[in-house]
Image (cartoon, rainbow, N blue to C red):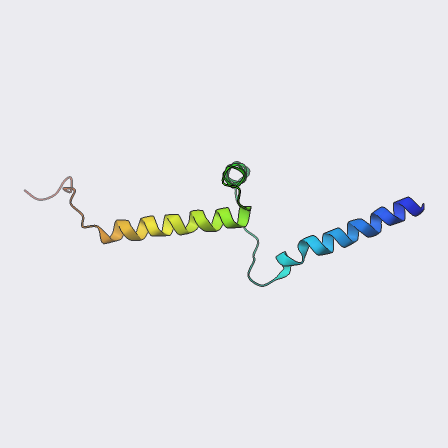
Length: 83
């Protein structure tokens, strides 16, 4: 009985300590496909970063890529254009 109570107490303390940083207003819940989560988990393991850091880095890289693409002049000829 004592052992079970001790584990419940330790589990409760661990949950509170683990989730304390996730209760701040700077975080939110993000829904992704399971396959996407698996890819993000693999990327985060290979890059030795947390999932939060990985998602942030990938989002910033994509934003930079899109902004760079918008700054480049459109040099490709348009198909079906006027002659």
